[in-house]
Length: 345
Image (tube, rainbow, N blue to C red; front, side):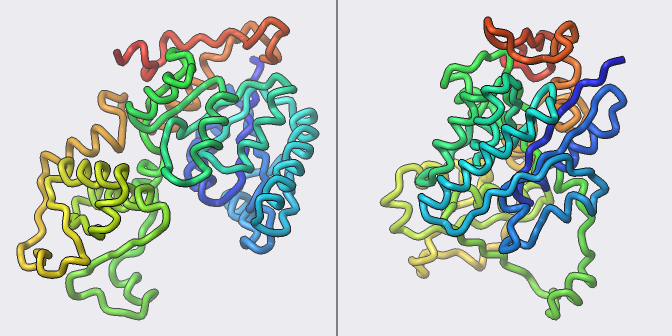
C-alpha cells in the first residue's frame, strides 16, 4: 500500500497547539505518512525557540526554515517572507509531499504556500473565511484561501465566505474550531494547584477581564470557554467603542442575544447591574455550542479526524504523485465527505 504523505507547516506555537492533535491522528494512521516543516517564530530565539515543544511531544521535524527577522517593520516582514519562500521552496523540493496542510492567517503561512504553488503541491487550509476587522490578517487569510484547494472552516458563515470568494463548494468542509476541541483534551490544574501556582486564594467569586486590540477574536474565545464550562457571562464594553464601531456594535449585540445576557457599559457605572446573580440560560448555551463551537449534526468523532480522513481518503489514489498536471488541479473526490457544502444544503 502506497502511503499518502501529508506535510504540516507550522510557524508559531499558537497554531501548533491547534494542529497537534491532527498531527497525532496522521502519524498514527498506517495509511498516511507525516512530515513536519517548522518556520517563523518557532525558530526565533526572541520568541523562546518554541520548536522544542514539537520535539517534546515526540514529533520529528523534517525541515526548518528560518526567516531571519530583524525587526517588525513592513520591510522586515517582507524580507522575512522572502526568506521563507526561498527556504520552503527548497524544502518542498526535497520532501515532495502529496499535500500541504496549513492553519490560520500569518504572513509566514502565506509565504510558505506561495512556495507550494510552482511545485504544484495541493494545499489544505484550516480556519479560512474568518474576519479580523482592522488587521492585516484578513488580506493574508483570504490570499491563503485563494491559494488553497481544500478548506476546513469553523462555522457556516465562514464556509459561505470561502465559497463567495470563488472556491468550489464541494471542497469546503465545516468542521468546527480546532481550539475548542483541544480544550476538551487539555489537562487542567485543579483549584488547589492553581492557587499554589498563583500564590493567591481563589475562595471568593472570580471575575476574569480580558482586553486586546483584537477585541472580537479574544471576546469570542473567552465566551467559548464560558459556554463550554457552563459559566455565566457578563458582556462589558465602552459606550465610545459601541457607538463608533459598527462591526463591534452588531457583534456584541449578537453575543448578547445568543447568550441571553444584557450588554453593559463599564464607563457608565450608574447603569451597571452587579447585584443581580449571574445566571446561565442552558438552552442558549446549548444552541451556542451547536451553532458556533461545533458542526451541528457532525459525527461523534474529533474534528481533526474528519480533516485527516478527508485529506487521506479522498485524494485521487490513481495519481501516485498528486502533483498538479499541466491541465490543472488533480481530481479530488469529496462526494462522500460528511461536511461538504452540497451535502449540508
